[in-house]
Length: 383
Image (cartoon, rainbow, N blue to C red):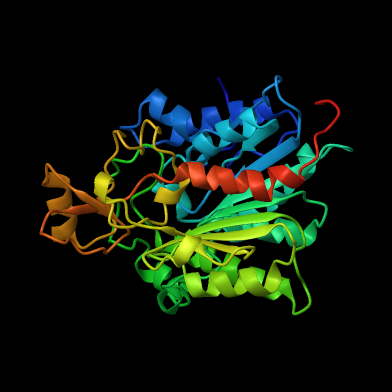
């Protein structure tokens, strides 16, 4: 099927699908584009995993509104599959969108711009608005930065779910120079590397980091010194995150999110008694799960429930990238693994792969119900 909303990569206009009030046309446009541009080894089934999707609310429960979901950098809409099903069962209509440059080939990230992603998030929010229907927003990693920006611009957003929010990178001392570096060496590792993940890029163009850095810098300017977010928010992160400056995230949560219905859930090695003080807006959970050979939680692992077919407890995808080449190859060749965040050392010499799911997923959803669902009034009828 021809992609009526796309143009060739040689054209000067944006080659990625435009927002359409008819979400099915938007999905068809992306499907056509990914069929043309995806990496050659990706099958039709792989392409389908990356597509934007929507799930209708369970008609057997009270209808609660709409949830717009924003994925992270070098990622795709697939990251939201598990959470989207949970939302639908709780009475939400769900849409997970796909940002320009994502889901196809890392080469498509060489020329994308951060303001294109922000404009896309804004346009989807506007396109899905309807009087009398609460509209909620969720964001993973870079998507959480975009979701926060939307909340600042639209105080009528009903709630936020922010997981591994990447407000500031631990690598900012490199990223601030990446715009210059990209002109001379456009790839972090010198070129495309092994692409064995069907829903996320392993290869990283320098421009990806540069555009992400510009997005976070833009949000810092947008905050202003008076701006606060006074809507229900559940924020989830791991103290072992190799990507995010978690201290900066915690500071933002404490100073800028002011709703009575708010919670920061942190996975850590240092869990206080009972997970924290009663009535506190912060809850701490153990990051290690020895019975599952999990040393700690990772940036990406918080996103997936244990039953995810690709990244769950019995998932088919092993994530070894992000380490030095000898460590990467040792991980790929090993018949047994520990699991942890990037750069987590092995306790006994057995290779450490990335933790790709959250054994404590039920706690995340339990806290979602307390923070968001408990203050989300049912709507009389779905649209």
